[in-house]
Image 1 (cartoon, rainbow, N blue to C red):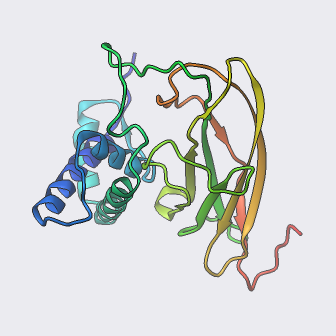
Image 2 (image 1 turned 30 degrees about the vertical axis):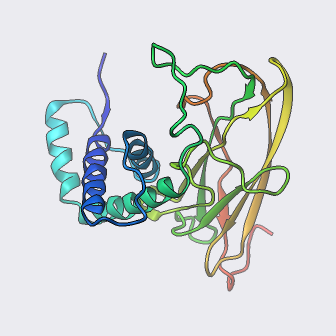
Length: 242
């Protein structure tokens, strides 16, 4: 079986550790914690926002790693996102940051039934050029009109899109408790998108779920929901779809 590997993981992990050490040495007051969990949350924050680079051989790893290091714009994006993620992680630590309860095997123990949400994935485009939209602000609202609570600080809400990541965005909503297992319920969410110089847009969708007691903290890349593509039009351009 061919082994496929995303070389951005090592690059981001290495750079995030360097950034944490730099900030610690400067004794910045906003850095309250630099534990492994906080660093991993920051790494996740960055990896969720940059394009992966997959390789299948040792030669590919060497060649692509050098290519990444020589991509000044990409490295600048990693630094910017890294510092942004560090501040976010420190200001809003994961709910189980210091009170995580793991069993002897390192597996989360959970006896409370919950509704576990898939990751929501989407893309924002310029409605006239059909190019990925840069610097759009995407907010996920729950059925009460509040910003949906994310699983941890590496998933921000609202979040921004970047042309480097093809205008994509993602959310992972924190699980919601249920009175018992096997309860069916529908959840309604609304995606709101704004961008300077563009007319805002929104899209609502409903998701049916069944409560369960499985570990809600482990992400499953196959358990995701693709939200329909969203298009924003400049304020001075007529929406031809209307």
